[in-house]
Length: 219
Image (tube, rainbow, N blue to C red; front, side, top):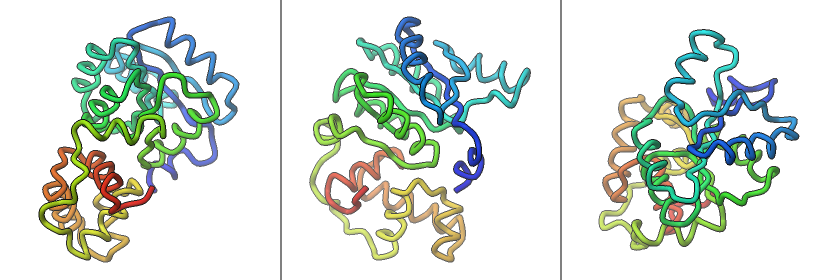
C-alpha cells in the first residue's frame, strides 16, 4: 500500500493531538520508549502545526495522528469533525463507547480506550498508518450497538460488492481496489458507494464496522 511504502525503513512519525497538555505530555512519555515510533510534536490545534511543519521542515511531517478526546469528549469531537480529511490516518483514544461511535462516524481509522498500554497502542498506530481499521476489543461490540444496526442490509450485496467490501476492510483505496480486481477506479468507487448505501453507512470506516457487526467481514 502507498502508506506502507511511505514509512517503510524508518520509524513511524506520530503527532499527538488533545486539549489537555498534561494528557499530551503523558502520551508522549508513554510512547517515548517505543523504538518503532517518533513523536514529532503535540498540539491542541493540528491544522496550524501541520501547516508550519510542511513549510519549515517537511521531513518532520507526521505519518499518523494520535488524538486524545479527553474525559469530556464533546468539544474534542467537534474539533475532530472540523479537522476533516487531511489525508492523515487518525487513531483516537476514547473515554467511553459513545464517543468511539462518534469518532468512527467522523471517519477515523482506529479507536481505543484511553487506558490502552504502550505496546498495544504502538501496534494500533502502525496498523492505521497502513490503512487498516483498528477497533479496541473493549469498545468494539458496545460502541457499535447504539447507532449501527445489527440487522443485515435490506438489499443484499452482490458477489462483486462482497469482494470490494473485503478489500475495503483492508484499508485499500478505490484505485488499489480497482487494480486488485481488474476494474477501473471509477467502477471501484461506484461499488464502494453502493456498499455504503446498502449498509446505511456515512463513511467507509462505518461501512466496514457495520459489515463486521453483521458478519460480512472478519478483521
